[in-house]
Image (cartoon, rainbow, N blue to C red; front, side, top):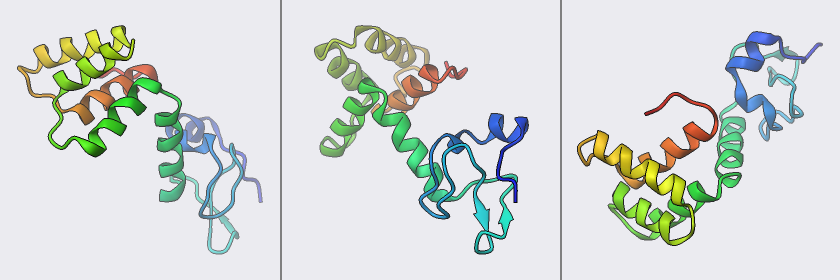
Length: 127
């Protein structure tokens, strides 16, 4: 069975970049189902998506800093996230969050700020 993804799958299933903890498929291969007898052509396992998300977070120190802080500070606002980033030398990210807070009339949580930074680092179109 060929587990090599096609162009559509590579573009629309970014978690293929990491190995799947659920079915054991290697990075760059499609997930399998039914005991490994069929390739999952249009989706990946939840565990693979979670592993990919964690890899994205771990690869971005500014996002990791914000998300670690939100574990101990409930109700952390985007402004607090910007201050935290500024204090740790992530001035460009802090300024982007301040702009986003202003654009959204103050309605931006720290977790939303982290998602914004992560999306923009990945080349997303979030503003």
